[in-house]
Length: 302
Image (cartoon, rainbow, N blue to C red; front, side, top):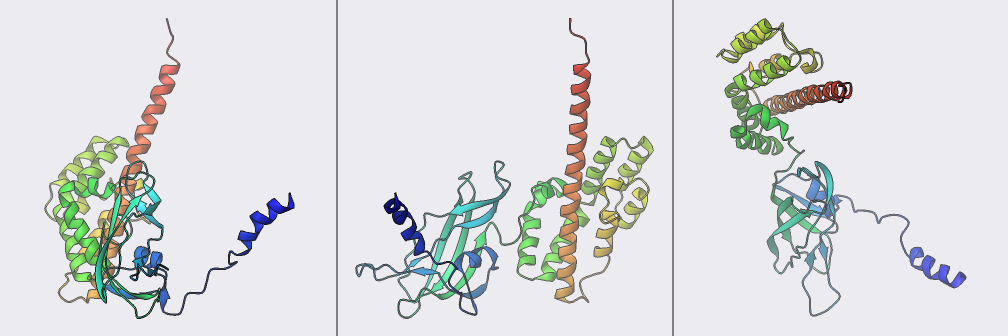
């Protein structure tokens, strides 16, 4: 019995109690892939793997497991991604593509484009530049936002996200501003539908219809300010008013940093409004199902 225990415990004794320290100024390759934006070069501590065989003198790119958001319907959250890709670094500087797949649904693909510099000697650390990635870098974009702004504005919204992720404030602000201004009527119509489901009186619904067709944003907000559903308020404020305030100033006299701050705020408000609209629709549907179930339960059977 003791011999069996020794066989089990001996390999465990060789496992380090703590992870080896990462040298200053370096990060792990997995952290680099997940958290570093494109167009940035970083010294990565464990990017390369060297084979012991002399017949394989070139290093391979490491392929750590990654935790990435998966949008597939069966996932809808963070999942483990892995890759079958095995890239050999044969040159002093080499561009590579690494393809990661979701282990859960095996459908979602994440692609990284990298430029890797081969170090002198058999070092595992090296300079890595992220040239790009698809889907784009940054927090996941909820699919509900596209129901709010319309699928035809998906590309424009994602372009705004790319500009935002790269710190291009004026570009991101211009993209989001165009979406809000062009889709103001659609956004108000989605709010009207929720107000109707929540039992708003007809005169309130009529004001939403009038605001939907109003060309000027300021007038549209004034028309519906009294009938706006409280459940859609964000931090106690009408989200349309928040968006209007963010869009009221032009971009000509503002710095790129100021535009970036407003762009982030606009995106966050749009996403939060989309989530609240979806929650209101879901609650209404659940309530109807509950009432129907109880009524059917009390219906006498013959």
